[in-house]
Amino acid sequence: QVQLVASGGGLVQPGGSLRLSCAASGSIFSIYAMGWYRQAPGKQRELVAVITSGGSTNYADSVKDRFTISRDNAKNTVYLQMNSLKPEDTAAYYCNADVTTTLGVRTYWGQGTQVTVSS
Image (cartoon, rainbow, N blue to C red; front, side, top):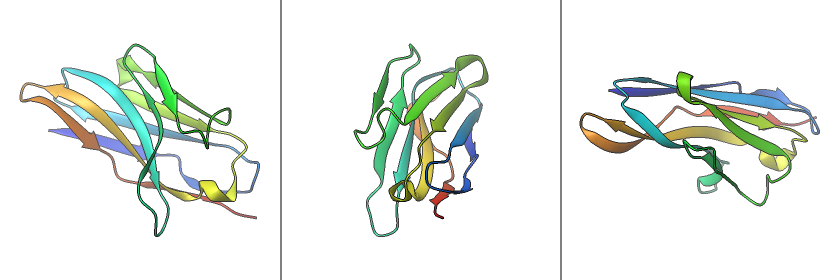
C-alpha cells in the first residue's frame, strides 16, 4: 500500500509565493515520475509540472518561469515552489507518482491541497 500526502496550500495574495510538498510512503521499491496537477471549479484537471527520477522536468506553459518542481529521492518527496501567483492559479492541487512496488507499477494520487490566490 502506498500513500501520498500533500501539504502547503493556503490563501495568498497575488504576487505571493507558496511551496507545496507531497510525501510518498509505504511499500515502495522505486518512483519514476512525480508530478503536480490542478483542478479549478468547473474545469478539467490539468498538468502543472512533472519531474522524473533523473531530474528531467516539464511544465505547463501557464506556469513556466513562475513555478519550480523539485524532488528529494531519498525522502520520496516532491515539491512545487510557486512564485508570482495569479488569481488564475487558484485550484485544488494534486500530486501523483508512478510507483513500483512488489505488485508492479501503478500511478498513485495524493489528496488535494487548496491554493487560493486573492486580495
